[in-house]
Length: 73
Image (cartoon, rainbow, N blue to C red; front, side, top):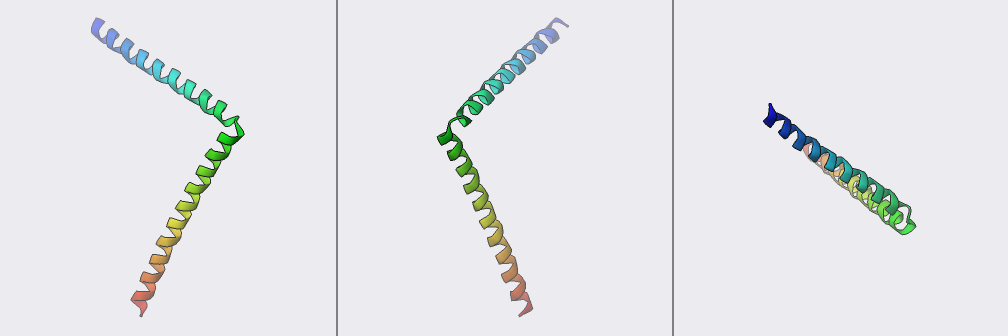
């Protein structure tokens, strides 16, 4: 029983440390978002990612269209 309690204590300590680190990270991110240049850069990166994903979907759709036309001919 004593070993189990010690092991659980170690798990609890690790979980607490992880929660504390996550909290600090969220605070740092929120603080960084208050700076206009940082916020603009993050938003631009998100837009670039969305554009890339949309272009990929369009290319895949075009490939399907070409394949379907090729089968009909």
